[in-house]
Length: 453
Image 1 (cartoon, rainbow, N blue to C red):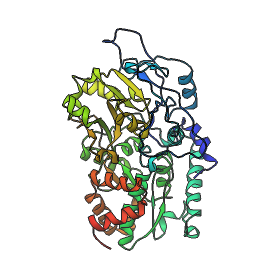
Image 2 (tube, rainbow, N blue to C red):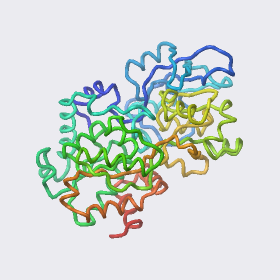
Image 3 (cartoon, helix red, strand yellow):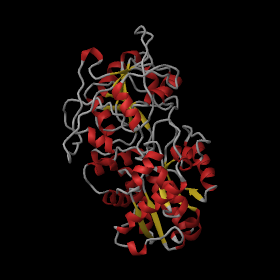
Image 4 (cartoon, rainbow, N blue to C red):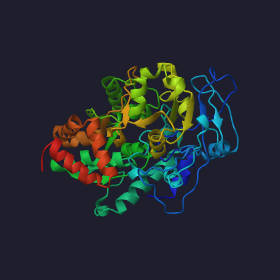
């Protein structure tokens, strides 16, 4: 949904208005003995596909080592392409960047031409792998970091463009009266899993007799949360840990305990006239993944099992992973892991999956609701030290809506949350990725899991 605000907001937000998880940062390397050296970081030059080319979801083909940092700023992109740089990571160790051609055991890596444009747009594979939260472990940019006038204007334009194309556009609320009408407006971020969740909760309200309006694909959290604050949307399915960091301006740090994280989120949300309803068992969190072959070869079931063998393995993840406390930085600090090499890819998207499945990396950062984890060839390692924070799906609802419609509305939403677990969300993501509409998938699940027509 292009708008004139897009480029301006992207610039104001440091190139992260896409909402995808993709860290920025400078990378570098230091000479030294192989035993003492930090993981080498490899990137490669990307190839551009002809205009209009669409990336297929899963076909064996030569793999892409994409050097263009998918979520990086234009400046950092050009710097990475031109020269090597070296700066210490958050974990205190430098991470090397090597030009295309440098590869483990002499193995050449080439870019899959038609993946590059899709990943740079944030698309590919039906959209469900788009970033949910922002860079792993990076302090989220909040609404205060963007010019308020620009942000408010973009929120109004995005919601206005969405409602103008809907059948009930004439009845669309304005910021002044959106909270006073009889319709509950459900919003979502701009990736398919978020739209699916919006339909799950919205359809539950419709079955209870509520009028529901959908504002889907509004954009990243920097736009959706201000829309919730202004009453342009009144219900947003969120992810607890990231929402807590964002709404608290990083003053509250989420933890692995879902109860503690939800209690903190509820306190922060209440100060904004927003109610954090009961969380679902379903979580969309960072997942450390290996192939089943690697798991059997090294007897891996938990992340801590990587300790004795990490020095023999290559890790793949988003470009900023070496310095992020929930990626390599945290794996080193909490688990003491030091991998032999790091390959900069995308944020849990098709490049990372292709690299893992074709043996270009041994360990990778994916997301816990990725349908690929249901297949026989991948194994998600248990986060036995609790590095990753709780990211339970949690509906955030305007307090005025809860007060207006009362406990029946809360009960309908809580019923959805109580029945939704990670495996079911992963299965629904797979159906959406295969071409089913989020609305149809949500309706089918509600009928079987919650009941009703």
